[in-house]
Image 1 (cartoon, rainbow, N blue to C red):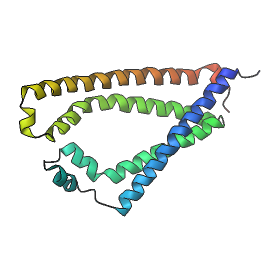
Image 2 (image 1 turned 90 degrees about the horizontal axis):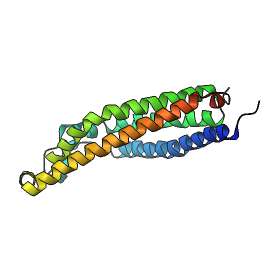
Image 3 (image 1 turned 180 degrees about the vertical axis):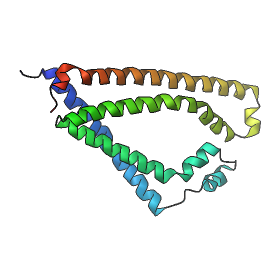
Length: 180
């Protein structure tokens, strides 16, 4: 029994997308890691001195752990490339791997939604106090906060829908039949 062309095309397109997104991400992380190793100035006080305001704790944590975050992101990008290569060669482990990655990204995206408020608060700490107290700016900041929440929520819902559909598609018999 031959596999329908649309199923073959779907798997190849997904493999190409994994490779097309994973390879540049992996290279960007590699460059970031090399830069951090050559120029190890991850001190939050450096940026604090430039801005002239106290560094919010969330940002200070990110600056202190930039190398670890880059290494973790690079490892995930490498995993994504490996799964893309496996999809290209129609390996069963790659089909399961892409499903696991899609689930993980969906969960992380949903888990990140509660971080929008603290992130916005951190950005507000960078603004001069006299700017935050004016009524016009207060209204604009409130509107911006709602917009960020709305965009984040819509993006999360879209991602859940897209990833759910992709996971379902990878479970269909015509797609499963392509993998060995």
